[in-house]
Image 1 (tube, rainbow, N blue to C red):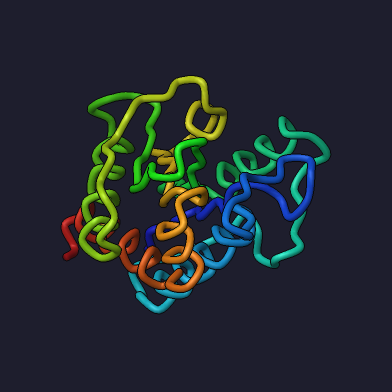
Image 2: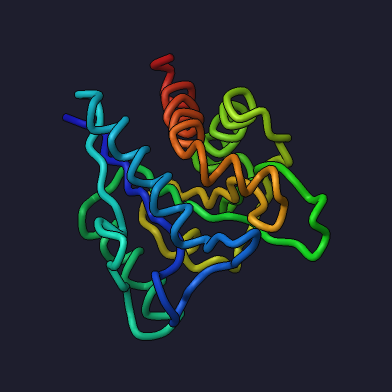
Length: 188
């Protein structure tokens, strides 16, 4: 039986629930492409099945922030995903802020350990700083999923070099996440 990975490309193409912007890029476009690359990697490995929250670039989920988040969680839960990975780009007024970080609902959980593996491999492959794992109990997609869920802030869209790397090399981020999943599962 294939391991089912739900890839949530954070945000919608347009409001409600559009994402951050920086350096001429939109978060929802960057994470859409990285999610597509990750799904392709997972689908090329017979051990996995992958589902995307946004299978097409113009997929719009929900009519509000709340209903957009609920649609993602409902889809993952109904599909019976084994793991939920939500992809995002970070933003800061400090354009020097750089690196990848991730969040899970609780420390010591399967999701927290999965996130640590993903961050380790993202850093190895992209060269971006590993800013570490944190607990966030207020994030809907971490709180309401029926499976281990990790929200990954891949890099800072407001940092020119992070933004360029995410935009120009989405496959590096996909490879980092894929290797992190493999490492977590003891398959690497």
